[in-house]
Image (cartoon, rainbow, N blue to C red; front, side, top):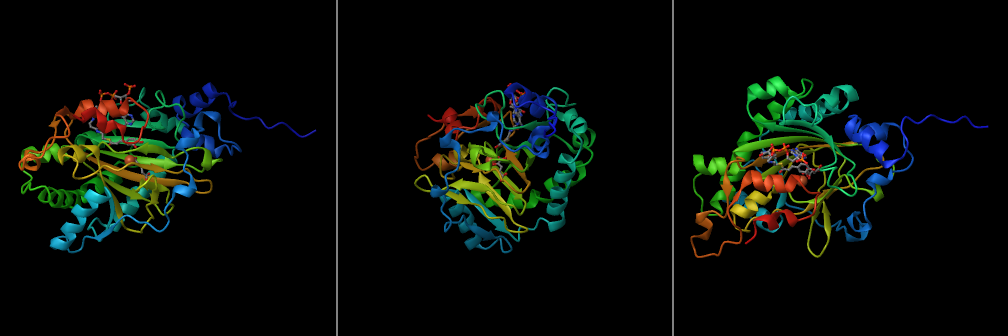
Amino acid sequence: MAPTIATPISTDSADIANFVISKGNGVKGLSEMGLECLPQRFIQPLEERISFSNIMPQESIPIIDMSNWNDPKVAESICDAAETWGFFQIINHGVPIDALENVKDATHLFFGLPAEDKKKFLKENSPSNNVRFGTSFTPQAEKALEWKDYLSLFYVSEDEASALWPPVCKDQVLEYMKSSEVVIKRLLEVLMKGLNVNEIDETKESLLMGSKRINLNYYPICPNPELTVGVGRHSDVSTLTILLQDEIGGLYVRGKNDSWIHVPPISGSLVINVGDALQIMSNGRYKSIEHRVLANGSQNRISVPIFVNPKPCEIIGPFPEVLAGGEKAAYRQVLYSDYVKHFFRKAHDGKNTVEFAKI
Ligand SMILES: CC(C)(COP(=O)(O)OP(=O)(O)OC[C@H]1O[C@@H](n2cnc3c(N)ncnc32)[C@H](O)[C@@H]1OP(=O)(O)O)[C@@H](O)C(=O)NCCC(=O)NCCSC(=O)/C=C/c1ccc(O)c(O)c1
Ligand SMILES: O=C(O)CCC(=O)C(=O)O
Ligand SMILES: [Fe+2]
């Protein structure tokens, strides 16, 4: 008789949720048990799984060389990309390659920690609301969980980060955030000029980039990648998102007519996307486009998005400069922290978040 292999958990949904979410093992813990089948809790309805017939392999989001960022042609391509695609990649952006490599290494270091160490940063144990380790986006609101673990860090100050962020990654994350400040400002300046906003004064700075959140995402090898997702369809609630991905790939952006376009990894590049806050402030000129991430059956993937956001206490709405020519406001004035709470209280649901602010 074949020996029975003791499994550390049953496949019962409650046991799986306890092991993954409450015990701090994450989906990485499940993946490393060598499961042969995806547990039921992660199986997405058919319509949420990526069908390869809708993927456009010949299409690509723009790739913009930032070395001559003062060149009006570069500015034009940035504004065009933000209007037409909502997504683009930048190369020669000035963020040192070492800073990118170090933050990717640090992401692997954090997720490589034993569950007991990562558990200290679960919502219920974390020393601060600004530091959170978790699995999936909103497990309490989701019918099917996403195959993703994350560490989410809301930046308040260097001192707070030094005191509270996980020691294995905090220096590298802070260095990456600091070294990306220049390119973030340049992008916002260019995008604002395209809206007739010629100066980012203190008020505009707080509206556009008054807060930042950085997530370290870990997508472990999945036993049945075709049945689940790494991240479900959503648009970001940020002003702009600056995303660093590794060499694995798997991010898809919504194209025309229900199609999906892959964002191929380009060594040293950064993916930039418009978030809902910028869509609202530009009165719909710049678009926050739906995107999602596939699970992978053979490789572990990481990504590191920086969400550049309005300050939570700011009231956002279409800029007066955009409405000056008589254009009608498509969005009402909303308190940004109300907008974010609305986003965090529901499962990912494509482009629906922005309905909250529509007139
Ligand atoms: C977000 C709020 C408003 C929440 O504050 P507060 O009211 O004190 O409550 P809270 O208990 O911290 O969180 C409220 C809920 O949001 C959820 N939440 C908070 N932070 C996160 C997070 N990082 N990831 C997932 N859920 C979160 C919590 O689970 C809470 O749910 P519940 O416990 O009420 O059921 C506050 O922290 C704030 O104002 N932050 C500043 C602005 C900000 O952070 N903006 C976020 C931009 S992030 C952004 O653009 C995208 C993030 C994202 C994340 C995962 C993905 O998978 C993804 O695709 C995208
Ligand atoms: O992992 C990625 O490539 C994208 C993740 C994402 O969309 C997000 O965290 O908001
Ligand atoms: Fe996103």
